[in-house]
Amino acid sequence: MIRRVRYDVQLARGAPMKLRTILVAIAILGTVLHPAAAQAKKRTTQVDAPPLERVLSGRSMQSNAVLSDVIARKPEMPLGPQDILISYEIAMSLVAEKTSADVSVIVQAQQTNQITRERAEYLVLQSYQMAMMQYQVLSALHDVLKNDIDEAAGQQARQSLKATSSDTVLVAPFPGSAAASR
Image (tube, rainbow, N blue to C red; front, side, top):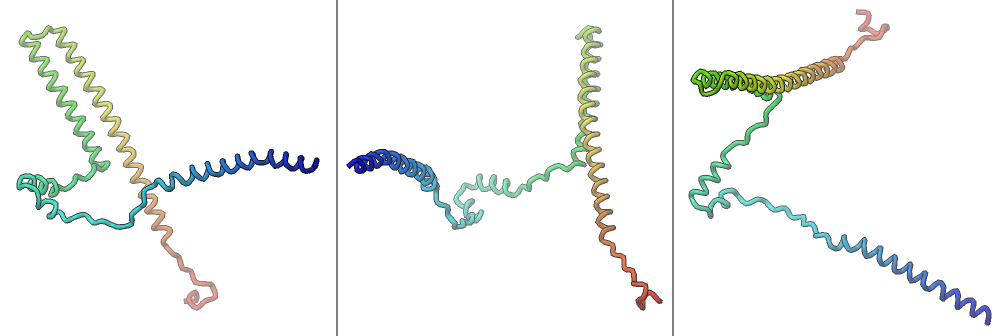
């Protein structure tokens, strides 16, 4: 009888542990399987785009002209490093031209007594300082890019030199062969 009671107590103590283990297992399975079931099914069929004429056929004449104009345009190619260098040089010359134009407007305003001599000097100095800052920034960008281009060209030349020298095969006959005696 004592053994029977001890066995029942052990069963009673183990039941919540088994129940807890089962509940944890169900919770884990539920969290793993729920997102997998909720994902949309992937379709493997490929759909080709309808022909352009078919898309444009249902539109008015005006929209056909606009769409055909948009379709006919070729996309612009991105600028290369040399193009950017040229744009820096153009921008530097535009800064100089703008400064010259600003100074001439200030001088003309001072000559017609629209501004005082002191005010004209101040405006000329401000225009000059602004132009110098812009010019120095553009010049620095130009120099950095020019240096990068030169380094890239040097590396490319070294790599092509390595490629041509490593592709060369030197064939030397063995000392005792017939080709060596000739």
